[in-house]
Image 1 (cartoon, rainbow, N blue to C red):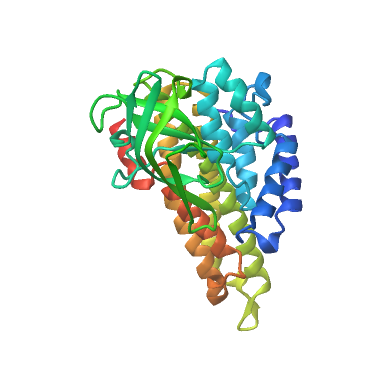
Image 2: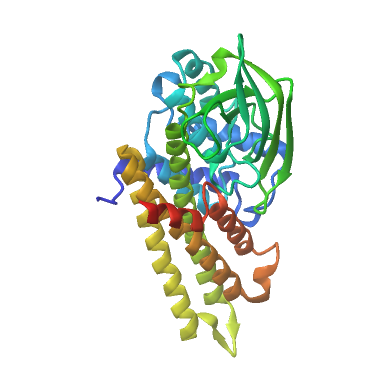
Length: 374
């Protein structure tokens, strides 16, 4: 595999870096943003073309691939930026682009690319622990369309999404890949209740309750009973982007920790003079290079389209991101000493984000199991 970036990738990286420096000041990174600030930043991302990056060019996007998403996600991770970029643009947008009819793509994709609409994927349920094939949310066919009933949890940015992509069981038994269907539900549809809450990293998620929600036949995305493969591919694309975001976050932690060790003195000498701390920084650098390489491998596997290879490399990358994200986040806090535990010190915010990344789209233990299963 060739992991080198071409000139277009470097130009994209530099543009996103300049955007993050302007919109996400270093001293405020990780702080919860007001709804007004979030909306302003989302509009700025749309004007830069980031929200349409992987979407088809004939529906308002740029038609770029997973490698370009990786470049953007890594820079967003360095700045604790991005909001719903992975959840709305990469995962939900990818599902609509891949499963939607021409009319559905024309209806929603230009709005996603322009930033006037956010979408969220609702697959998780209480007690399923990342195994979305155990969905208990029911989809019942009627003469006019479908009726959905059930409850979803941890819908990322679900309380700000105008469009909810709901995975429901239309046939088969819990745990079967067959019998799962995907539906596009407007957040304001009667019977939909959205309960938002804060996550550990200061972002938002929601519980979703569906009480006999009636949908027209045109709200089904793709083929009924056959949504599993498309959902798995979209979640893998999101996991690959999160691996790149984790690499960016660790890169920022390394830079901040190295600067702290150079300037902080103990016993009349900078902390950087102490050999044990030099070794720990070296370990962090090695982990960063591993994370970057695996994020690149995962992105290339997503782009290649081979499902078996994609599952293997994405799980390997996500396993590494989950393990090293936690280890390096806690190491950075420890090397900062007591100040690393304060909200004013940025390293704690990066550590929280890395812990959350581990839990999204399958944690380290889940991906270890999938990797072992082949």
